[in-house]
Image (cartoon, rainbow, N blue to C red; front, side, top):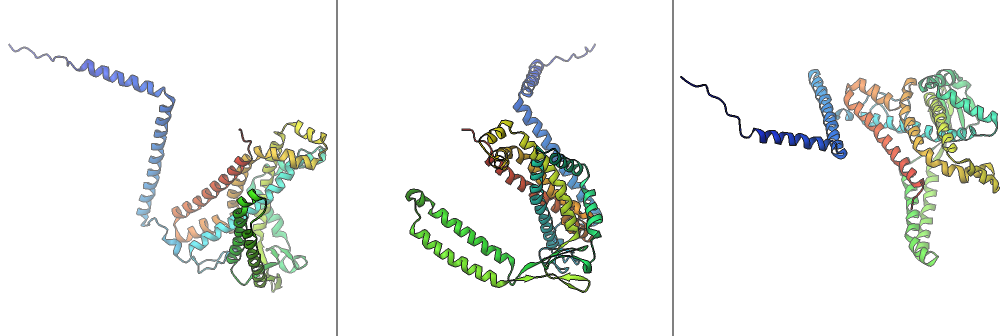
Amino acid sequence: MTQPSVSKPSKNTPKQTNLFLSLIEKNRLLLNDDSYRAVVLQAVVLAAVLFGLWFLFSNASENLNRLGMTFGFDFLQVTAGFNISWSLIPYDSSMSYWRVFFVGIVNTLILSFCVIVVGTIIGTVVGILRLSANPLVSQLARWYVEIVRNVPLLIQIIFWFTVVFSTLPAPRQSYHLGEWLVLNNRGLYVISLESAFSWGWIFALIGALGASIYGLFRWSKPYYKVSGSRSAGFYIGLVFWAVAACWAVWFISHSLSLSIPTLQGFNFSGGAFLPASFGAAFVAMTVYRSAAIAETVRAGMQSIDRGQSEAAFTIGFSRVQSLRLILIPQAIRSIIPPMTNSWLAATKDSSLAVAIGFPELVSVFMQTSMNQTGRAIEIIFMVMGFYIFISLLISYLLNKYNDSVQYKVR
């Protein structure tokens, strides 16, 4: 009679079990380590992000192949074939989509720069007025901030364009300020300078003169620190620089001429022109952004101890002197970080000007160019890349300035 076979227990089972338990215990101890856990979490997040990017790109590639389209930027060399209503740099319909992209960038930067500069000035003044001891002044500044900040920016842009700028008189009934300025429902015409040469060469010449005089002073600085006077080489170089500067002034003055806006038919020609859409977007964005900056300035000023202003009045400082010499230099350390957000927002808010037809980047590139070429993915990537680059640049510059004004611990 055959006996049933009985399997013998493996001799390695206890050892394998102990090894498995030791690995679990080791991993448990490692997971309790903050640094190890942080690395694991970062690796998991990175893997998830890479998987998401791979999924998006593969899905987009599959859809493009199904539609018979290819991914590429060769369309940028193709002739655009459409006009742009306003551009600071030369442009016509025979130029390529590259030129359209640059026109949109320049228009966006001009609008954003004007809003940032004027909005910062107005916001600083309003923020200081909110702390005024005069109740009428402080309440007016407060209501300015409260009303402007609680109305959406897009509504303000449309309001200024439809209610204010579009209701201005026609060109023949324009508002005039002598021959210097003409305002009508098409925009603003101002007297301008025209050059027989490219403005790029003129600015390059001015920049070269500035860089050379700066380099001359830097070169002579070590000798000046030791002897207390400038060397003979410095004065020789200064003479050569003065001769070059005089020639540059003569050259530039003879290449420039005044262009005065004059009425010809139903419109003005000559001078510099700013369309009504630019004016509406500029006014609305400046007012809206100045209100946010005013709150930033007010909070920064209130972060300074009250004893600072009282001490300034005690030693005879006026209100303006105490602000300029004591309060603002200290408050700037807490103003700059939130001010950075306002400047970034002003740059990105310029895309809302598309609602009133201002030819900024989104209007001329993400709308018109994308509708004509069908290259939605490439165009969106380029526009996103521009805004990311400008935002990072502004953040870097303001962070560097913020570092320079902070207290240095020694």
